[in-house]
Length: 325
Ligand code: DP6
Image (cartoon, rainbow, N blue to C red; front, top):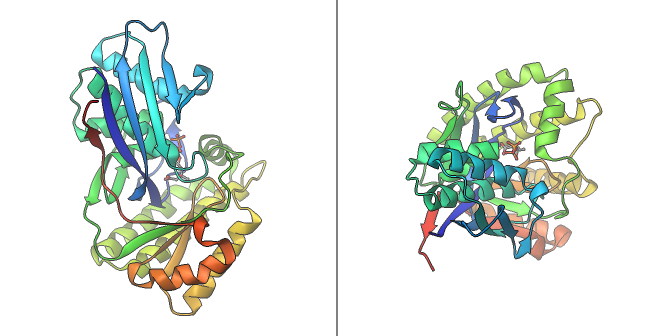
């Protein structure tokens, strides 16, 4: 039977950057994210005897299977768990600009894990769904849950999964994406993080850096202190990007407009507004701010980027299953 699941994307406040096991997707460190309301993927899966191979349709386009490695990895794992070999028909719709640093693979792999497991007759716990989504894309492990979520690095496949640390985030923490460039990114997060692991002389420090940032972040979350959350997230993101600049060959996700955005946020901060920034494997900048300052922040950014390039996102929910058609 066809099953449909919806999962929302998440943005890391403490970044995941580096795997110690590339097949199982086991990270070097824990990471911590906020699931967002505005960006999500809805995916329907049906295992179908009539098919000779998997058929994957994303945003109304049939995809060549050769480019669908992450999807097939998740489907294969589901088939293994369910003891079947049936090809799957996957229909997925993104309400996320794909591969532009807005973590489309996080919502996509989480929704796929939810839909495919149920379509195969499995009734997995949220923890097991997080482990399954992780096999597709590390950050997807966190999109199973809503609000503030921590992916525990774990020691192996069984112990590496995400768990919610605060599902209802109602103390004013909000994010705004500045859409600088929606083109496909040049260096994938997968390739970029591996190059950083393999070649950056600073990578050896990264696990300690994350541990310290994570402890400080947990404290700031417990105190519901948006300014400190933003400050730590910003520093952690720039430390991650230092691993790209120090790789061999060096690379960067920054574009000129990225710097413009960062400077604009710094200016707004100097004017007394609570706003910080983070960035992932793409040029778009996400502003982390206190909801009370939203209008003033938008008023400051709109003349530079245009109102339609600014997308406000509230904290969002975990995975849900939709009614059958
Ligand atoms: C910069 O989860 O996309 O967004 O596990 O190789 O699929 P794979 O990588 P992915 O990497 C996300 C990297 C990041 C930081 C984060 O989300 O924690």
